[in-house]
Length: 260
Image (cartoon, rainbow, N blue to C red; front, side, top):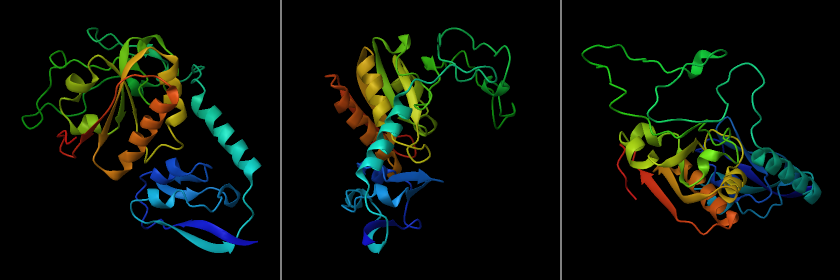
């Protein structure tokens, strides 16, 4: 049948994910950093995604397409929610890097006993005059737990209890030199990139906030448009959780300055 359906211009798409969050049917997903229409029968042709796009990469076209399928959408959304809210299973052998654990800030980082060596701490820069060695004891890490990726952290864990939750875009700690002391200290920090990660964070973040004794939620994002997806997901998760706790957004410039 010929019907109205969305079309996404990949040249204009910046990968900000705002359309993904705006689409209530889950018809849009991220593929190789670009927004894509996943299936024609997921798109209802109403265009909730159009005003969310900051670059006008989405438009309506009339073309041959299968009809909108409400049952298929419901099944798709249910499957996505189940995947995103499910706790990450403990790894069975192999690399132990995803095992959940509390980190003690004053203790030296222990080496993994076996498996993948990729999670071991090591200096990468040569100790030359242009790249002086850093005394790690003088600059302690404020990461309270492991893992830190939103997709990997469990929904419920002891380390959440009585702490603030810092939901940080990947780039923030690289841009802001004092990020550990100013923002991570005393909080559980979980990180993600809405431009690179598949799916929405909303359901899992809502489950984390609802299931734990979290005292406040802070979103740390960059000024770039793609970070808007992280802020929107966190704000909606805070609302869905039903928790009456403080919510704050801190925005950084690419030079690391707090601009809002």
